[in-house]
Length: 489
Image 1 (cartoon, rainbow, N blue to C red):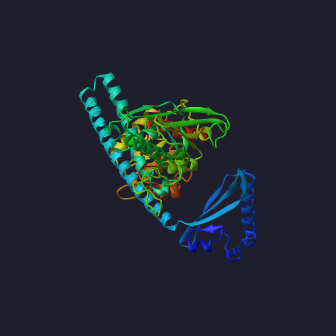
Image 2 (image 1 turned 60 degrees about the horizontal axis):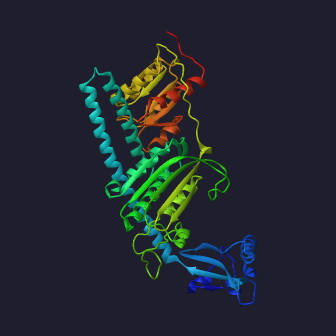
Image 3 (image 1 turned 90 degrees about the vertical axis):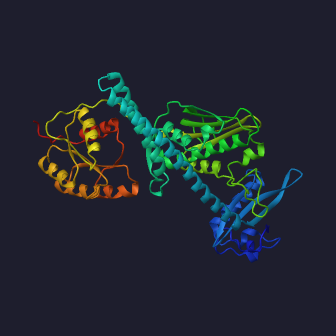
């Protein structure tokens, strides 16, 4: 056994009472362990390496302010394993550099994302203004009105998805699962890569029709963004004329171990291919190692002098965190394809069934928001679904409306932030009048700002902008699962 730094003599293998001074040539290493569980674990690892079942073993060990790597490898002589070599290396400096690099890259990724969102959001606003002008100038042209209305709806949804990319970087929302359209997430990631479409590369996007799944938006977005940036960098450095990147989505059925770490089943597949120079076999084997680089390195630390990127390692970590897997294929001089697989077992079935509206003269739904335009549009959508709706732009008017319609109102949709009060306070007031009222928060704010509404009794937070299909599903679920108490007119 050897150590590469004098402080390595203090490494304890994770056993606080490990007796390093007892380690001598000719004496069993395992006699120095006091933790029997760790002793057994290392005995099994060494036994597997000696049998040839395990090629080697490596792990990091943290001790106070120092970090070490422990590596166990076989000593081979004439194709036979003659013994084991245990190496302990002090990598504290390298770990410090890794953390600094990760912090810098996170800041750079956020800058690119913000720039991409701002660029696309301004384009979206331009589109909305243009179609609004069509509605104003051609109110009697049914075809123009329908097309402009649909275009505005699509643009608003696109803008909403883009702004959610910024919110996804917040720690409060990073662990939350939400129902995602994979194509939208991928397109948002593509649009967030700086100057991708003006860099002289040919970028093609082919979207299939994958089902929506519940997963972590921030983890998936960051992973896709990292892979695309990695492909862009590979193309930028490649000495070829025709530089092309291809992004595809779809669904595939896999058999056991067709892709490493995945069981047989149905998966969403997101593939990013580039026509770059490809990778050498050794590079391909190590490309998922943090801070592995083929570029110039610092002699003392081994870390790349130029930014090496945590692209592929970070992508792999994120995708594994949400239950998926990543595969990579690369051929020297031909290019590289990275594929992300997400299990469809977490999909959420969507209902396209129509609901039967219950026409009543007294209001069934109360919408509370200080923005009159929001109230008017939501009220119109609810009315088009066949339900009666009352609106309030202050807390006082909301409470008065509920007092006068206690039996008929079964759903309340409440804005999170208003000039003189907040959504949580309004919800408490509504609950005092009708404890069993189904209340939903309604906001474009961050999760941290909407948590008080959930604590006050909101069933869930509806994210602005809210489409008519979403309203239909919410109203349908409540109407079907609660007894009608409305007074018929």
